[in-house]
Amino acid sequence: MFFVDIGTSVPASPDSSRIRDIEARLCGQAQAIAGQRSSAALARLERARKWTAQMRVERLCDPGSPLWYLGEWERFVDGEKSAPRLGVICVLGTVCGRCVVIVANDNTVSAGAWWPHTPEKIQRAQKLALRMRIPVIYLVECAGLYLPTQSQTFAGWSGAGAIFEMQARLNRSGVIQLAAVFGDCVAGGGYMPLLCDRIAMTESATICIGGAALNRNAHGGEARRLGGPDVHVHHSGCAEKRVPDDASAILWLREQVGRLPTSAVDFYRVAEPVDSPYRAEELYDILPCDTSKGYDIRQVVARLVDGAQVRELHPELGTEIWSCLGFVDGLAVVFVANNAHATQSEDGTWHPGGVLHAEGVQKMRMICAEARDDGLPVIWLLDVSGFDIGEEAERAGLLKHGASLLRELSNDGDAPHLSVVLRKASGAGYYAMKGSPFHPAWTIVTALSRIEVMSPEVLAATMYDRKIASSAEGSPERQRLEALRRETLERQRASTSVEAVLERGDVDTFVCLSQLPGAILTFVHAAYQSVGRPVKPPRLWSV
Image (cartoon, rainbow, N blue to C red; front, side, top):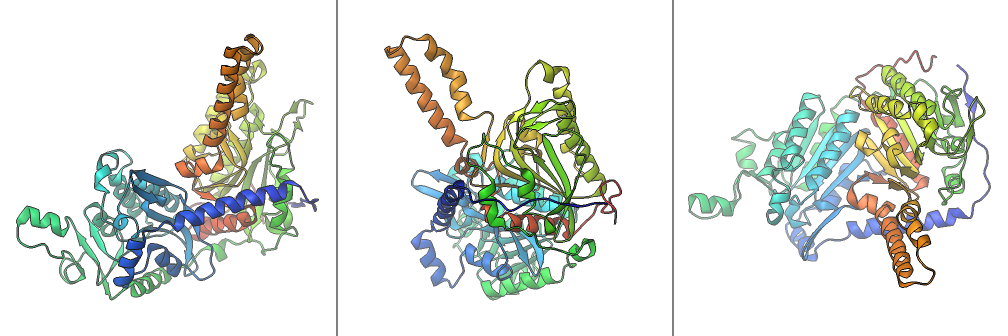
């Protein structure tokens, strides 16, 4: 099998500093969100000699390893009360050399209670672990539902109860779940550790169906502490280990992870890892801020794969889609990407960049089927404008081919998929490129990402340009329509920006371009950590 060199050195771009400025602003926002802690809550934890949830996460993970936060921009506001990060910290990290998902109740936000949308955020983290087959670690200090908003979190299809249903699915799928309980763990919060394989409790921890005040109201008598480690470790058998404090609980969790089977990465590494000759920093010079401008997707991939070498897949088909087999740290990976510049098909037809046509859609379906059969993880690099329109597209059966691709993307037997929105993801093209509704294991956005049905400019033009053109020049009606057009344009730009997408929880993680190779490396290591699928792919490669 022949691998070819891709990529060249690129000149500096004036867009580079603009992208870095956007990244700096977004990183500053993330730091500000993480720092929104009540001084009273911090003082309470200090008096109790307890760590914050953030400290627990950082001390659990291997020193120097990257922490990829999930849903970091999400928050809920209820009057004067606010829940930054929805009161829970979710992380894809590394513990004892193994990729894990960490779910930590934020004990500085309403005693770790679950707010509206907190259960959905936890479930997304659990689903990442399920698709990757990697362990989940719960750092529990949870007061249950935030009761003033209980109607929004209790009874729905994706409410608090669905967290436990997901835990049961993880159990049945053989995914290890570990828990350490650090404080009061009441009502629904008590089920989270009880559905895990191993549980430790600190001396300040409790697990109970109802808290002390509720118990007093139900049974009378004085309110007293219920369900401590003296009960659940030595009598009920609900927990396995009793530890004195936070530091001991974290040490115990690391010991448990260290007993798990080691990662299968070394076994499945079939090529010697080779650094790319190109720097990730050059991504800033490759990607234009103006989404109407094209670029060479091979230049991007050259900075993500070993040695900047790949084997292109089905190059004769659907030239608007570029796909290849490459190696990341010596591990085989399939890339599927949009060509962001105009391409010419074999019959001489020119296709604009990012637009999906029938042959490209068939090509993606074929590659996805081959990757599934061979057990290879897939990385999607999205810069898609949507599907082609017009009489020719209808004659070519584009809708039929699109439906066939969507069925393929919904296959539960897939190896893990990672979706990276490099710039734009528009219309049904977002779905066809394994967008969030089709459940990739992990979804990443960059500073340039926009996710929308159609661009704000096109939407505003569609709604108002004909009306404006038909009104008299300078008339009050024309002025009113022009004002509405400007308002619509600004509102749509705000609602489809990367900040808005992150705040709504439509995607998982924001990553700076310079960090993209590191995020991809983490994904590939997680995908090969515990493999329960074919990984001897005769269709895509041979050694």
